[in-house]
Image (cartoon, rainbow, N blue to C red; front, side, top):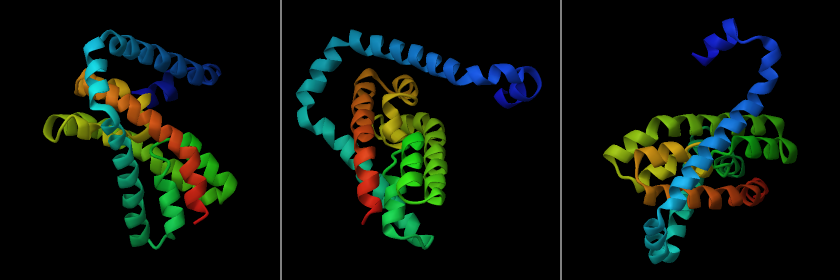
Length: 188
């Protein structure tokens, strides 16, 4: 529907404002989710009781993402440093793609961009299914770093408030890891 509107309806002059509009819409959506999470005082108490185990979720997501990328990369004949660096983008396509293009090669940067965009698109499709049939906590993994922003509302709607808080923490930690791991892994 968006493509049809862009092709036939929306004037080309307004296209420059789409980035601002989508950013504003995302901010309003995240504000709403944040207010909802803030209201859930009991959730924060339960999360506090979980303690350091909450950190295991992003660590396992990071490990699974990098190992999966290396396995697929080896099957495609890619060097381990390249495939692991692409996987370490954790879905944050705008940062990992640019970083790899600047510090390594434009081609690998483009691959990271495409790979991480596809990861985010797949996350939107898979999260409701995984939450319903596999488990709420498992639904956090496909989103990677995006679980603190773009996929958080979907996780919140598909699971529960406890899982949404874990998802936010997951996305925050993975987002902090991207600028550290991508350059480190590409230099292996």
